[in-house]
Length: 120
Length: 200
Image (tube, rainbow over all chains, first blue to last red; front, side, top):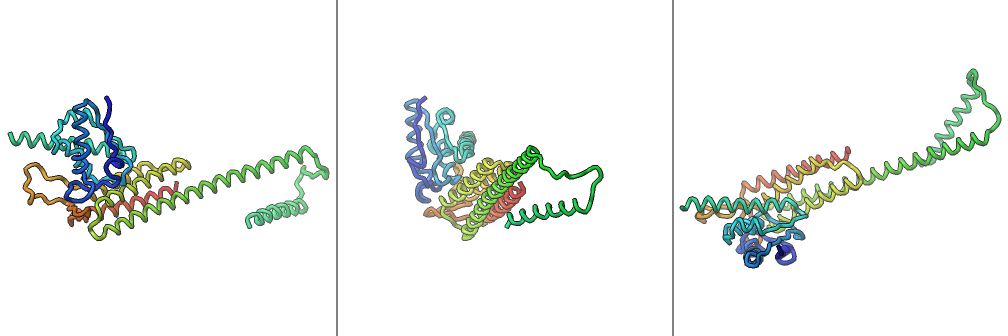
C-alpha cells in the first residue's frame, strides 16, 4: 500500500508548540487540522497509508502529541480500526514516542466508547 | 623527569647488584669474565621486548584514562545543563516549546554518552542509564502534558495543571512541586551515573 508521508519538522515546523491554536504558534490542533486529518481523509479515499515522521524537531510536548493523535479519534471522528490500519509513525530519535502515540489513540478511543455508551 | 627517574632507578639497581656481588659470594655460583655473543643478543632482545610491551600497555592504559576523563567531563556538562534548566524554570513559567526541547536535548546528549562509552569499551551501566532516560520522559510529561477537557465537561470545571498563553506555559502549584522534585531526582541520578562511570 502506498503512503502519504508527513514530516513534522519539514512540512509543519521544527519547533512544535502546545495543544490548542489559541495558546500560540505551531499547535497540535493546527497540525492535525491542516496536515494530518486531510492526509488521513485522502488516504482513506485513495486506499493509502499515512506515514508521520516525528524526527528532526527540537522536541515535542506531550500535549501536542496527544492532540494530534488522540484528536484524530476524539475530534475528527476517524474510525479507530481505520487509524490502526492506515497510520504508521516513525520516531528514531525518541523511539518511545511511537508507543506514546498509540497509547493516546487507544485512550481517546476508550474515552469515546465510554462516553457513547453513557449517552445511550 | 620520568625518564631521569627510570635511568636513576636502573643505575641504582646495577650499583646494588655490583656491590652485592663484591660483598657476598654464593656457593656453586661464579661469574665468568667472558661474553657469549648469542646470550648477550638474547638478553638484549628480551630487554627490548619487555620495554616495548611495557610502553604499549602503559600507553593503552593512559589513552583509556584520558578517554574516560573526556566522557566524564561530558557527563558533567549534562549535569550542569540540567542544573541550569531547573534554575531557568525557577520563575514558574517557561516557553512551552523550550520546555519540550530542553528534555530532548538532555536525552540526546545522554544517548551520545552511551555510544561513546560503548566505543571506548567502558561499561555504560545500561540499567542506570535507562532509569535516567525514564525520569527525563516523566519530566517531559510534567512540563508539557495537560489533559484535554472530557466530553461534556463544563469548561469552568476544567482546570488544567498547565495554562499556555502566547506560547508561555504557566504551572499550577502542585505541578510546580512535581517538576522541581523531578529535576532534583534527575540531578541525583546523573551524579550517581557519573560516579559509576568513574569507577568503571
